[in-house]
Length: 201
Image (cartoon, rainbow, N blue to C red; front, side, top):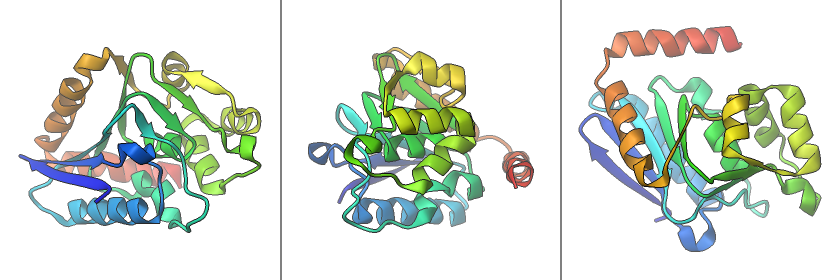
């Protein structure tokens, strides 16, 4: 399996677990991730979702040879439960889109990002749309056109991520946030997320 699933109290942890393939988002991984996200929505004992990854690459991009559902680029906007992401190393294109869907994104110092598909003459509108929703159309367009790598401080300044932490503290900090959200009043959390969805429409 490319995705490891663990339940810790009220937190559902989903770990991208194909480090040898740089956790590339292919059809199988996208389907597994979406299935677990849907299951977490329906699970009364799950209050929050934590997404992380094994290895030095959080997600190495999209497998363009396989179709993936568009929902993989929009799941954050429809989620009724808060999603926390803990990112380390490198996030490329589809990986950046995954982070853009997080309600709280925490990254390790030294992490880097890039919408680099243009270097290979490719583009997926779902990736651009997800990132634009997080940081704005103009910035997302520039990053997609240039394919340049950007840093964690830049991602923080633009609102793509919410906090930067030393690598050795990443798991503890993200887990603490997810646990706090998982144990928060569910009706209040649902109201906040519903309001966010309404104002985004």
